[in-house]
Image (cartoon, rainbow, N blue to C red; front, side):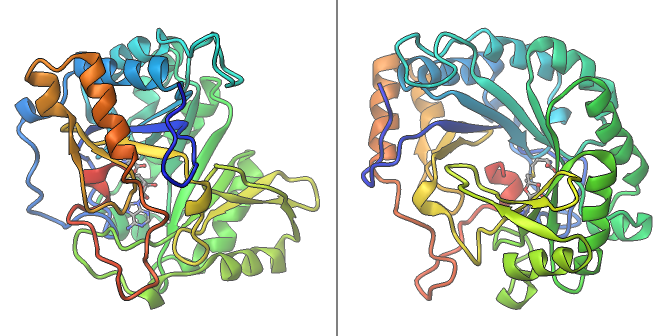
Length: 339
Ligand code: SAM
């Protein structure tokens, strides 16, 4: 049965934050110090994540699962969870192209330890990898992430390619005055490595609250800057995918922009999220959460959980309001929600 929200959007994609912990402290996401981690007992177990995922896949025909965090690779034994999720099957009767098969399994990671995990994750059934990389300059990398890990992240990207993940994508958050001078360099990196780089507009989900509209480098500007050096043409129709995409006219591949702030794509949004502690969210910017963990631990049946998920999806709003005075920042920052 499809999970359809009040605006007729069918939910197809579930993002699961497997931990709120992270080994980086990116300035646009977390404070340098003072993050209060969830006690382990409050974080869902693999069995609990699997049970929820099973309901989403088998009942609601969700055919895409993405693991995120915090930093998903810091969760011990991650390949075990991936193998469990890979054993799920989208119903034969679903209209999904994956009917009768396992859901598409993806991860968003900072890549720093990906070399250690790439093969195991691949064997376990992970399909796709997005690695975050905002700068190619070692000192700036250390300033932005508060960790001197550029070399290991680049090696993590290489490891993902060597392990056969297809595609490997790179996500780059662009903040004006911080790394917008590297837009063309990052695009060049993608062209040279055969990687689709996706530029992400800086969103008001930073823990320190320093986001301001003028720190956002919008899609039009990003594309114009790349086009000046590497001419582009737009690839039509994004569908439910968050990125608008362009093709390099010389055949060097694709580049994307996720324009959450300047060109919101809420009308096509097919995503929902479960946080590390089992709170269900129907929008990255939602101010309301639905407590699935308490239900899981208080003996709720699958029918009870499915009914609560349907009730929650019934509250999914038409769109976030970042550019309006009515916008209210969520209390949690990106690392606590699971981007
Ligand atoms: N640790 C993993 C990583 O680095 O990809 C996964 C979690 S991280 C929260 C997911 C994505 O959110 C990353 O690509 C990160 O750059 C992005 N992100 C975090 N804070 C952001 C913000 N304020 N605006 C836009 N993107 C942000």
